[in-house]
Image (cartoon, rainbow, N blue to C red):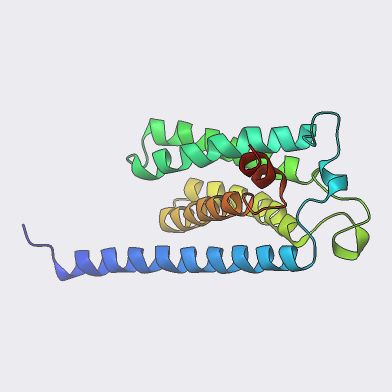
Length: 180
């Protein structure tokens, strides 16, 4: 059955909105990542120091919540929206993302980073996530579903890109994976 012009326009509008969200998220992620890389803001030896091969409790919590969020994201994005399952999985993902962001606030390099605070440019994602996760939930609860979808899709894209950045040589996860 042929679709109407209005249906195609709505689909084109949704695709455009998703593409804009993806481009903005990628631009911010790449900018922050490049600044962190150029200015030594990825984890240093001090940030990685602990009793267990450089893996501190905040890093374990961060990884232990980021990886399930990374896996759960596509499941939520592919499932039918508005169902009880979508809401339950969404709440789980939101909790994982919030814990991931909070844990990242404790992964720092004292004396390094921005003005010696121990925080690098990559830590802007902590703030970004802590603002946008509640915003996305609020948008859904107030019925602004397209805006909710854009915020949550953007957060997931940011998570994927940030996850890819962790594989950069010199970073803890990159070193662990590529030195095996």
